[in-house]
Amino acid sequence: MEKFERPQKIESGRNVEQRRLAFVEAIKNIEVGEIDTEFDEKSAKSLVSEIGVAKLLLLGETHGVKENVDIIYTLFKKFGFNKLAFEWNKELQDTAENFLQTGELDFEAIKDSSDGRITAGHFALLKKLQDEGSLKALVCFDSETPFVDWDTQNASMAKNIITNLADGTTLVVAGNLHTQVEPITFDDEKGEHHPMGENVKKQIPDVPSGKIKYLTGQFHNYGTKDFREKPKGVELPKARFYKSDDGIYSFELPEAHVAVVPNPSEVLPDGEEK
Image 1 (tube, helix red, strand yellow):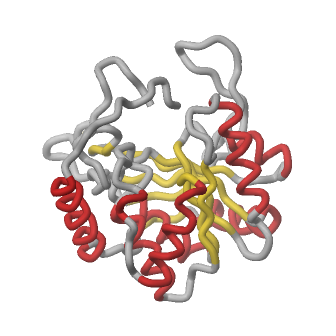
Image 2: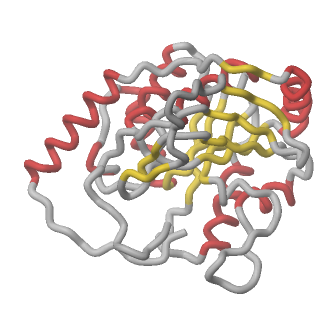
């Protein structure tokens, strides 16, 4: 949730070009692959059944984790998704499609991105899925209008997703708050807010919802942030996928690592939150 308008900064063309080259090189070097995962088969069968009806899964993530794209790829392979929806501005639809068609990246369109929604891994994932013939369509569903109120933004997200549901099964990936299927509250505000997931559920009552749980590690969201520190001398468990008692599907990632973002140098002002 945006609570401040970032100040305009002047950056030399040389610095932008250096960031572009580093980002493009990262895309080339990233190897997206399936994560060795312990799937609870009863949960997996349940999700297959629910996807058959709803034609989509809402997956909540923490932005800026390198392994997010590997999790997406793992779920694509396990459950046969053929459409992918990202919490990217609708204006980036042409940028993404041009990358898929030509392999050329318009870095100018993403150069200011610092929150972890857009990473080098995402472009490596898109290329891999396309090369394998697994990607039928990509949808960028975030609102084109900047700094609208949170509820309006989430209603717009839901509308953009619903509009693009025809044909196939879609994995919808967004920040954890957006994928909630019930009203939520913010600690510093009164009243309820209505996330994208809740709006989708109004149209598709049986929509399944899931989230990624990060046991240890770090992520990038306007700077490097920490999950729980990895315990010394303790062997981390295998990745797991299961359905919780509350009906939410969970993908447990043992250790998270920082993703490569277009603008890694921008950090949040002290006391501000996203």
